Amino acid sequence: MGLFDKIFGNYSKKELAKIEPIKNKVLELESKYADMSDEELGGQTAILRGKLDELSTLDDVLPDALAVCREAAFRVLGKKPYPVQIIGAIVLHQGRIAEMKTGEGKTLVACLAAYANSLTGKGVHVVTVNDYLAKFQSEEMGKVFHFLNTSIGVVLTGMNKEQKREAYNADITYGTNNEFGFDYLRDNMVIYKKDKVQREHAFAIVDEVDSILIDEARTPLIISGQGDKSTKLYSLADRFAKTLKPVTVVEMDDKADNDLLDGDYIIDEKAKTATLTKSGVKKAEKAFNVINLMDADNMTLAHHINQAIKANGVMKKDIDYVVKDGEVLIVDEFTGRIMQGRRFNDGLHQAIEAKEGVEIARESKTIATITYQNYFRLYGKLSGMTGTALTEEDEFREIYKLDVIEIPTNKPVIRIDHPDVVFKTEKGKFNAVIEQVIECHKKGQPVLVGTVSVEKSEYLSRLLKNKGIKHEVLNAKHHDREAMIVAQAGKYGAVTIATNMAGRGTDIMLGGNAEYKSLADLQKMGYSEEVAVEAAGFSNTQDEEVLAARAEYKKLYAKYSEEVKELAEKVREAGGLYIIGTERHESRRIDNQLRGRSGRQGDPGESTFFLSLEDDLM
Image (tube, rainbow, N blue to C red; front, side):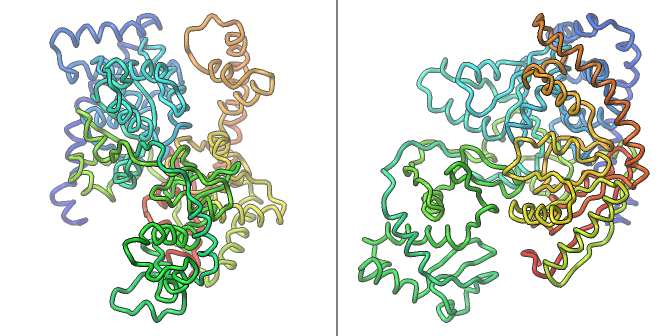
């Protein structure tokens, strides 16, 4: 492919050459908008909308819109989008996928494209992978939109209809793929049009586009109503399943006689299924006093037994789900986050509840359903961003008619990616990981250790505790402190253990993060979280408490910014952020996302994957 590329030039480079003139126009307008006062700049939104109404197309006002938003971002956030970020925003505006490496500022790129497209008045949806990110990004970018007199809404789980309708009527709406999809389903179930919350589906920007449109594409969103009462059969089937002897195979062989295997049911690791053998069927018939388990009359019983052996044999606690406050909660296998309000279907969730001895919920029946694939095809224009899309380029083209444009980094990546280190046993591997952490810790080099499950992250945490090393753990059990933990992972001497770093959405800055330190201090002073967040923003407010907090915030931010600069230099001298992978993930993309946390914006960094022959993937 290398030689072919050299002769014909690769696709992304050709497309970037076409975008170059638009980007140059935006840069040429920089001084025009820099000379304006805050009021004049804020008033540009109305002027641009007026131009659009005079029969111009959005492409005609695009350079001005991006230049206005760029200047506003600089005044409000202190960040002036780089030329590569302008290119990213143009790619999104054109309804394509921008592949940008981690740490290149995708949140700001989405902000530029969303502002430009909001001028049409049809609404822009910015789709994130969880509520936390939707809230965080809408607050962060909301400062820029407020400055430009553009309304912004955020759709979160648990909001009522009025709050949601207001959020959808805003110029720009942030929310999760789940909420957007479920609101669409609920809208299709209302009797009167006035009860709908969403308006048209004009333009969507999907963050972590590969995770949402590929990994979860065929995940059905299901709205269910109350079904039959939960039966005692779940508990009986679970009790029976616990008496059986499982046998594990890596992959079921169709030709082999699986009944010759010594066990009552077979667990297929690859397909994640559990199947009764002849001896298992015999035991079931005896236990439940039936003549033939496969008889049509015994279908319900057979189904309950199958779900019970799957719950006991295949579904693992702290990997596939966690038990919190007497509830079984699903863990997303791609991001390591808890999926609130979601349940396994077909009685599997009830079978797991029986296995864990918590209250078994009522069964439910499906009322409305749609897959993400079909939902996102409703949009007139669809675009997305991610650090790793080229691996799925063909699927994007085939299913969604989207092409992927690879956008160069602002500064060259100087991170050193060491070759994988392989050990015979898992114990040997983890000992080596601890040694590497200690070595980095001695010289103050921050370390981020990536694990594939909650269980492994807690095991590593125990090993580090035994060695007396202070560290933070980020997994499905602690995800409410997510931003705080991630933002400070680049501090001098910091050690952080994280499960599946896909789409964490918070930049790891070397030396720490001044904004988060300032917010934490404001809360220590007695301000509530809401007031602290408002204080860091630029919304027009007359609230005395917010204004007082804002004055404090500015002082704290100035103090910590200086500290962080000095500390960042110390971290660079120590070698930058060191990434340790403790296992290869099934998706190569998630490995790349973990690596990409280090070496942002030309920072130094290192990465190594430690593997053992006992790893699942091996």
